[in-house]
Length: 254
Image (cartoon, helix red, strand yellow):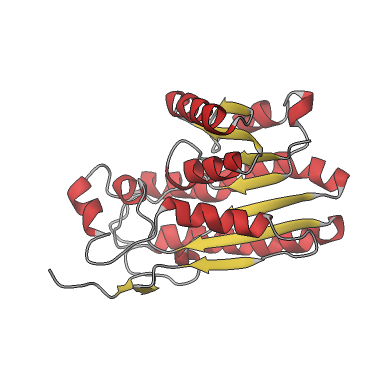
């Protein structure tokens, strides 16, 4: 029987790359996101290329009633989720704390922290009952070291780091593995979202060095879940060779 993986935020970037990687490895997939058209495109791509069965679910992880309605009432054949990838997340704005927009703060907190909690709360009871499962929390270098103008985003990723450690403790008696994967600079829609569609500014984040790409993180996810069941890769920091901290890079001059 094929294993089932649930991936949040699968419409683009890391989530899409992780879904494609796990589809290639024969997982059946539950993919979630807010863009129905993107979910349908990914469903077709995985089904055609890899033959995996896909269940696309369009809902907002920030709204617990939607999470519960979508994931709390899965068809019988989809209920035994083997791998949960808590990927949905975003950064909005890059401002000092005294200029930050409250709406930006709320979007980050609601998605990065509450969304992760909501999905985990609905999915983990079945894992506990079976004494089996693996949770992948997508963190960030921003959850390891704060950088200027990123206080709130960094705070949400520090929260993910703390929640990850707490999950590991709470789920220890139930044979559930918990892994946090913390990327550095990955070229996805991340910076375009952060800078609210300013492509020029977003592109500048990735100039002068070789950044990570989404497939690098997808490969890290697969490495973690492919280990023997007695091995838990608990915390993985994945950085470009040219990046040392959240805001320290070695960039080549033009």
